[in-house]
Image (cartoon, rainbow, N blue to C red; front, side):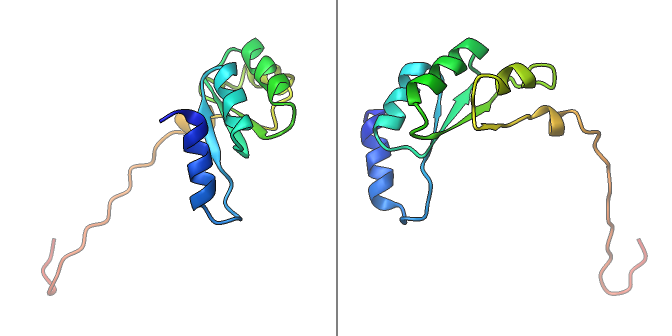
Length: 111
């Protein structure tokens, strides 16, 4: 099934309040998703210039979200492409983990 058919099928089955978001990896896919009625295109792992072209091609007909490969060092250049949203995984990927455990015993047994 092609992208346009998938988006139209999702639109037909989804409640009217649900947004349809499509993850795309190139400009042609972004254009196809928007033309089919997607509300949001997730520009996944695209180079900055390719994101800029995708934003231009979609012409504000859908929100454009940059995701994948976004770093704190590249976020300013990505913002300059005109995307509406930016997902920065580095905020959670590099956060230190805290190891917490909880031990319970049943029936008054000591652990």
